Length: 458
Image 1: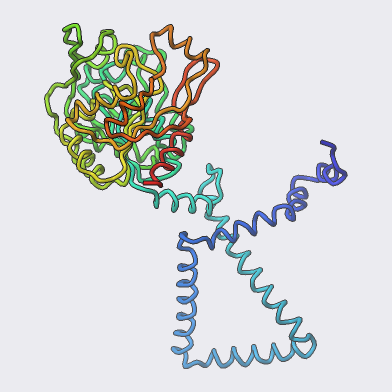
Image 2: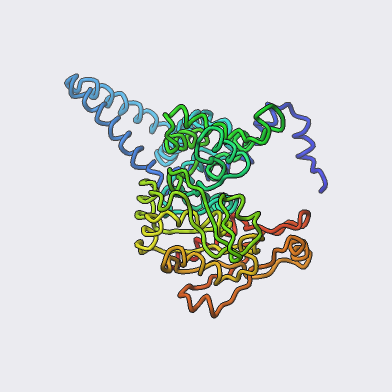
């Protein structure tokens, strides 16, 4: 693109001169920003009116207190001044000039005030008015309860937080592998891994603090393999008197998350599964590694109590979403809490299950969409979802071949069987395909957009 003489002249100016030379170019943006302050829902106009009324009453009160003497003198001075001005300058000129001057001073003063307030948010990429508009919009969003665990739930939350700040994530605490498993065995805390992932996904600023929480130590005796977030949650649990719920709430404040993250239960839950070949496997990480077909799943202790805050969130929800995630080790563990599955069955709000795109070896080998739903219904003893969200198109041949090496295949949509189960089918392109790794996952923004589109129709 050729450089115009104007641009060449601007480049030769000093930084300060260049700043002033661009004032005219920024004017429309500034004017647009001023109008944004008058947008409905910000509660700015009413407070400005109240402030102006307060100022007027204060002045009037002072005038009454001084027996109106200053008011008479001021009015007499203003009258003489206006008479003098109109003698030399016609009223059709002096009037508009005075109005424009007053408006200019008012807007300039408000602009500088807002600018001073904005300086209190130096790390923000948004103007203060945009932050306020976003804040109002999100806090007016529906109350959403998202249930699951693993990377699937964090992916869902990453998309949902752009539509509502009234999100409650109910997370499984059955994980016994990796860093979470080690902390669980050595210190006796509930596994913090899935909780940490969800808090990071809901963080208002998914930058430095999120990277810090997700940082995994690569060296150090006893530290290798642990994430900072897991250690932080473990430390907060100890500080709060071994109250895991309080530890999560305190950590959520550090990350400034949108919404809440709650464990499904505070019991030390351990999964078990009975396979078709008769084997009995105990431990979440061992179930997948066993490589068999699961015929029954449960937990120790049996019938753990649900977290009261989680049950309240379900009862007050406007919308409930479950999945995506590992069916038997991320989704169903939440439903092994009797009070949670009972609360889900009672609510009369839209409820949808997000089905996985690919089968998972050791858990859902050969499973169709209806098989996923049947497994959930079997644990709950009844149907608890109104609809199931399914990826519309299959992954590319390259991706399918890549997954086939791991004995994983696209989840087949058996429409007739799903319909017989009483579930509506929502088809949409919600897949994110990575050509470099040959992996697929749910795209956070597409997934959230489709979920809210379906919710708005119900």
